[in-house]
Length: 307
Image (tube, rainbow, N blue to C red):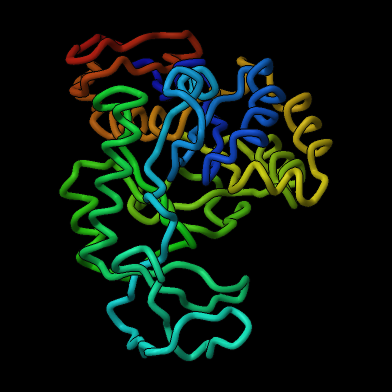
């Protein structure tokens, strides 16, 4: 019987993507100008519509996936933390970091202290409202059904109610914050509701080189980088991004360039592929790709093919 090696649509086993937060238009546009000519795709995680028209917004992010990053970009109260509310008016210079302070104009929002300074935080009920409002606003711009995943502001939150709401909304996953490098052997996420990226502006080329050289163990691989386009500006790393694009872009025989969502849907569909009695069966809704004894083959959705 012929052997079968599952691949991505490009008949490679390695995918490249990115996951970029916040919707900083100027630096997002510069990032796109560097990556798009090399065919590199990914996902932009937006929390605000900025002062541009829906038409301009769509033009900027054309060809990329859009994810929900929560309106107002707040943190959420954790289930395992007690918060002490100060009755004082918030003053950044005088505020006690042991307390949270009511926002003067935004109902249900509070200031709390983080290592990077004072930031917004709110309760799970209000957080869910902001998630849903962001979802609706983004889909008004990019189209109904276009926003299908969520990214935590400030990393992983610890509110079970919020996580359950996100799952109930039908999102395919939730991304947290944390650079994995090659610690997972570049495997696609085992848990798409708590996944993270492999590299940032600080180690992008270094980790991509590890990925490029990573041995073929027969499994599909995934490399993703994040987490803010403005980091390339702040830390003067645009040259690093250009090196990455030049070295790892425009190589369709080596990499499948895809959005996070495309990789999710493909790897989930691949789990439904089975081989029985010399026949390969694709029970998913999308075409799957493979090498059969070295020859390229396509397995249409809901089909059975003899090897």
